[in-house]
Image 1 (cartoon, one colour):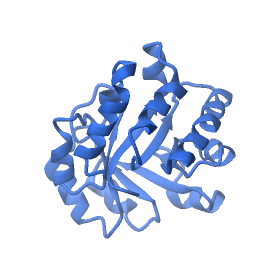
Image 2 (tube, helix red, strand yellow; image 1 turned 135 degrees about the horizontal axis):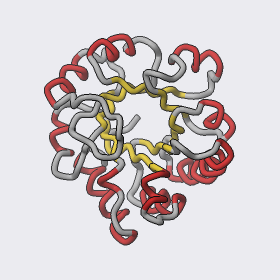
Image 3 (tube, one colour; image 1 turned 180 degrees about the horizontal axis):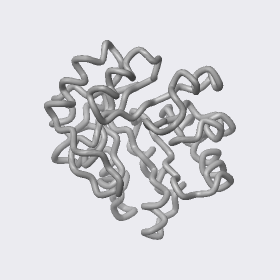
Image 4 (tube, one colour; image 1 turned 135 degrees about the vertical axis):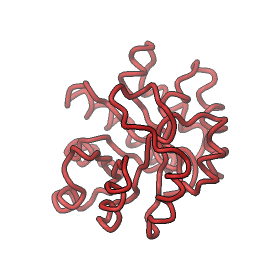
Amino acid sequence: MNHGLYAIVDVGTLRARGANVTDFARRLLDAGALAAMQLRAKGSSAADTLALARALQPMCASAGVPFYVNDRADIALLAAATGVHVGQDDLPVDAVRRATPSLSVGLSTHTAAEFAAGVGTGAAYLAVGPVFETATKADAAPVVGLDALAARVRDAKGSPVVAIGGITLARAPLVREAGARAGAVIGALVVDDASVTSTARALHRALGGA
């Protein structure tokens, strides 16, 4: 995974604002070679999520951006995505890798114990968060903070660490300085249509992207 912005396309957030999901994703990709993009479609039907994944996958492939689907390894596989992102309550990383060996698997962690357990699982990256308070996840875990993020990076044994939760343009340099490979962003990207690309580009660069 390259350094920079890991852009999360959150279907619920976008549709609540009346935004078109594929148009939004296209504007994000216009910002350049992002670290990754993830489709997060909690609450959407499997058919709807698959249709969106199949629309976004070729766009990401053309832009050279790894494409992940949140939670659903089956949909990621059917859409020919780069990988799937799983949480602590989803299938274990090793089980997903055995069932779908063609997929990279990213893993969410919140505590030091969860992170330590994730190291060595073969996960493509380990997400750490929420680093700051976040308003885009109602059931968010307690804030981790920058010091804990830096400690996780030191303990990662070479695994890429992705920071998530409350990352804004002002906070992005702090995330980069803590050593995270990338920063996953939802809320700070949801701006007016004309500003999506410039906002994504600014965040990508602030997070260490080229």
